[in-house]
Amino acid sequence: MNNTEIRTKIKDYSSQIERNFMLLSDKFPTLLNKQGGTSLEELRDVLTKMGEGNTASNSKEKDLFSGYSNKYNSLFEQLNQRIQDLEEVNSHVKDIKSDSEEMELIALNAMVISIKSGEKGRAFSAITENLKRLSTDMILYSNNLISEEKRLLESITSVKQIFGGIVDSQKQLSALGDKGSSGIQDLLSNAAAPLEEMRSAVASVYKPIQTAMEGIQHQDIIRQALDHVQLYMDQIIDDTYSDDGTDKDLDTVTFNITVLQLCQKIISNIESSLSRCTGIFRDNWSSVSTILDSVEHQRTSYINRFLSDSMSGADNILSWLNLIMEQFQQMISEFAHYQLVQKDLIRTCQNINEEARTMYAVFENLGPVVNRLHHVRILQQIEVAKNVAISDVRDSVTDMEKLIQSANGSLDSMRALIGSFIEQIGSLLSSFMESITADNTKMEELRVSKNTFFNSLKDAQARLSGCMANFTVFPDGFSKECQEVGNALQAITAIDGKFSSLNSEVKSRIDALSRKRVEMFAKRQISSWTIKDSHLNELLSNFRSSAGQDGSNQYGSSAIPGDVTLF
Image (cartoon, rainbow, N blue to C red; front, side, top):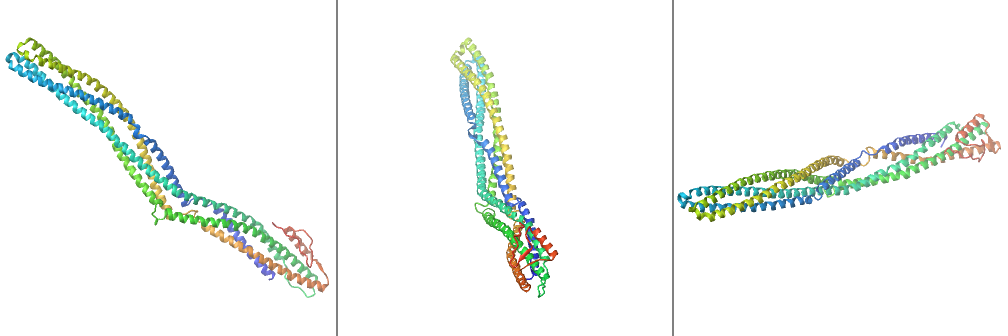
């Protein structure tokens, strides 16, 4: 191979090295800056927000539902006590009604006797007629009181039943909440762990890329060395010699040998630098390729297990999320039912207060009637005392007196019971309604929280659909640029192998010139030669200086210049 062919190869290799190093200098920083903005990060954000929302929602739910069924035990114990008070009132009312019925019967018998007495019994008969009417009023008011008490008792019982419905509704809400929360936890447990493993694997690719990029640091040294080789090769003199081996011929052949030896040393150093460079590239890019293959395997497995439309198994995220959303939809519907029951409870509590006041108003009607009965009783006693004709009713009058006193005693007992009942039931229901209203406020906050979370699940569903359409784990263009970098690294590695061949060709050229010079030495009968041309000596001096080599420019036939160290 002649000098021209060597120069052509060196220029071609230099061009290839420069082009590939330029590409690497551009691609490596781009790869390192390409982080985030992937379906993996999008899905991770979706799952993270689902977890955070679920934790916050679940915390509010537990605060509200924890111990709720036992929260009002004391209240219902007091309600049971009020029911006992009503039963005692009812007993007194029945006594009054029984006394009134007996008074009415006695009054009828007394009227019969007085009527038989004729004109002498007319006054007593009129008094007794009034007593009978008052007894009838007592019976009427007693019946009204019993009816009001029955309605009040039904309302109180209804409160307990409605509250039982509220507790059942809350249990249903809690069960649905637990089911939905548990579903989300299961989803996160199943889907998040392999996602984090894949994310960790994706992140691990950047370190070997960063380390591989360190190989670029050799490019300036290699380029500079290649520039030297090209410069030196451009100064080599055409190989045209005379047969006599003139001084000029000897200067030329010695100069060319020396320059080629310098080039040989520099090419060896270029080859060493390229080997170190490609070693860095090869080792680290092999790690990059392994990671990329592993990530792709994980990505495919993740899609098949969690994201594929064709896979509707237990691990399919979208199917799982749809099921969770159905459960939350049921929960939102149950909130509406709860609020209706809650309003019914408040309305019933208000009715109890109104019915208690109504019962008291009915009770208040009994007092004046009993007072009038006392007055009529006195008139009867006076009439019996002065009218001998109706002495037969004296026992009846006495019996009526006892009955009126009994009714009056029952009335006094009832007054204390009803007054205490109204006061206590009012305070009890007021406290209960305040507590229920506060619970309702918290429940509304929970409903809003759940509804917000439900809407976030809808958003997650939409974002998940986007992830499923094209699940990416690396930024756009990352894989393509990795391929371009890999191709460039392969090209540099291939060029590295060519420099060994090139060095052999340079050595062959040196050997050919050395043999030519030996022939010249033989003709001139000399064993060595010192270049006489000052220009050539100056060039060699400059070459050695730029190459960092010190030493003489005088070589024997087997002289080997010192090492050229550019790196």
